[in-house]
Every structure is written in structure tokens, then in C-alpha cells.
Image (cartoon, rainbow, N blue to C red; front, side):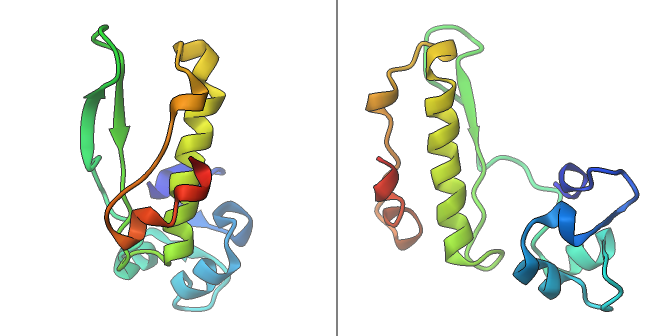
Length: 122
């Protein structure tokens, strides 16, 4: 995940690469204006993670699958978790034509506090 944000490949994140001043300030433990992989790992925000759910089928073809990644409350503020969910819905709707999915029939709901807040993106 760290490498995904490290757009220039220098092994450290700048404020421009992270796009979140508040999180950047929290991660930049030594205050040098950059976040190293060690600083990011120490924070628990970035880790070598795997999807929470893998290869969830949405159609008959073997390639009709999605992977779901969840950030947990201990790793990110609730607003960012909700934003992740909203972006997932937006992404699926954006690809609806290409994937032959009815974008009016996509929703994100749940029975716990981290998912019920996403209902504006139904």
C-alpha cells in the first residue's frame, strides 16, 4: 500500500503524495517533512495487507470477481473509512457500462457503525 502512494518511487511520502495533511502530520514522526516506510508501519496505517474478502463473484465468468479491502477504525478516522466506501460505489458505477452492471442497483449498507454511514451513496 505504501508503494501505491509513493508516486516518485523515492521510498518516502511527501505531503503531495499522501493528499491528507492531517494524516501526514500524524505519520511524520520525526518532523522532517517526509514519511518513510518505517514511520508508516509504526503508525499501523500502512501494512502489508491482503483483501478482507477475495474473489467475491458478481457474475458467471471466472473473472467476474471483486476484492474488498476494509480499513479498520484503529487505522483510520471514520470519515476516511466512509470516504473509502463512497469511492468504491463511485468506482463500480463508473465502470458499470464496461462491466455490464446496472448502476442504479448498487448499494453499500451494513449493520455496524462503520458501514451504516455510507447510506448516502446508495
